Every structure is written in C-alpha cells, then in structure tokens.
Image 1 (cartoon, rainbow, N blue to C red):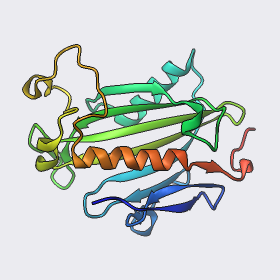
Image 2 (image 1 turned 60 degrees about the horizontal axis):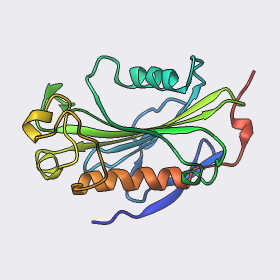
Image 3 (image 1 turned 90 degrees about the vertical axis):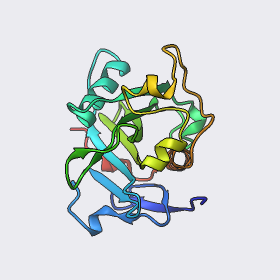
Length: 209
C-alpha cells in the first residue's frame, strides 16, 4: 500500500520534514532525548529518527561517518550495501551543505526476548548525515525498517550480513535499486520524502559556543 506523508514540525518548528502520516510521535509513548525527534510505525515497528549531534571533527568526512556508524551500531554487526554523497538537488532546502547516505542491514533481533529471529531476517537502515560545519553540528537521520520472514523472502537486492552466499550474492555484487521488495520500497520512499523536504527555519537552534 502506498504511503502518504505529512509535513511535521521538528524541534519546536525550527526544522520541518515529511513523515509517514500514519506514524506516531514516539514521545507520546516514551521519553525521547532532547536532541532527537522520533516517529514509529506501531504496526511494523519501523522508525524514523532525526538527531542533532555535535559535529564530529575527524581527518575527513569519511572518518566522521565511520564514527557515527560506530555510535549507532556499537557492537552489532552490519553491512554497508551502498554509500554515496548526496547531490545538492536531493536536499533542496540545503543545496550547498555536504550530506551523505548509507544503506545498511543488520540482523533482526526480537526485542521482547532479545533473541535472534530467523537468520534470513534483518533490519534495513538508511542513515543520512548532514554536516553543518558553520554550526558545528551533524544532523543524523536514521530510518529503520525491520523485515519479517515474509519481507526478507520477498527482498532480492540485499540480505543480512553473513547471509550473502545463501542469497546468491557474488563478492563483486553492486547494490542497485532494482528487484526491491515492498518493505525496501517503503524504506527508500520514506528517506526520499524526509530528505527532499528537510528544511531549517530557525538557525538559532544550533548553539555554536
């Protein structure tokens, strides 16, 4: 079923972006850190998180991105299927700001029992990092879509880390947005809507001192 989207005020309206219309503001059901705005699909437990972080100062953007990923995944295994710098037209609201996107998978874990699900199951994630050098800020947008057993079986473009042989992916496989299952199509649509409609209205949100 096609997703519909609603423009949402973030951080008191200092930022706006598009969020799936049926998703719930996670702060309505539990406490959320002040530097985050989180939305959740109650039915499938997919999430969309906008996070404001202090800018990571590294030798280059690639090293800074690695730092952010280590913070997100900690000790959990993950596989990067696609990584690239966004074109300026992909974020019309921030045309001259460097931003990067990464598509990854990590094993699916059943939260209530903290046990692995079927080995073919996974969570697909897209992490977008927007680097606001002048404001000493990194904005991290993370979209997580857990894949049920049925979702995983319908997905032919990627798989959980370590399951590549079973799915028939060659060592030189290059991910492309082809042969996507419904859950992956939703993931990419959520990311596209969130990024292309991302706008900063009040730059005083960012403390630079």
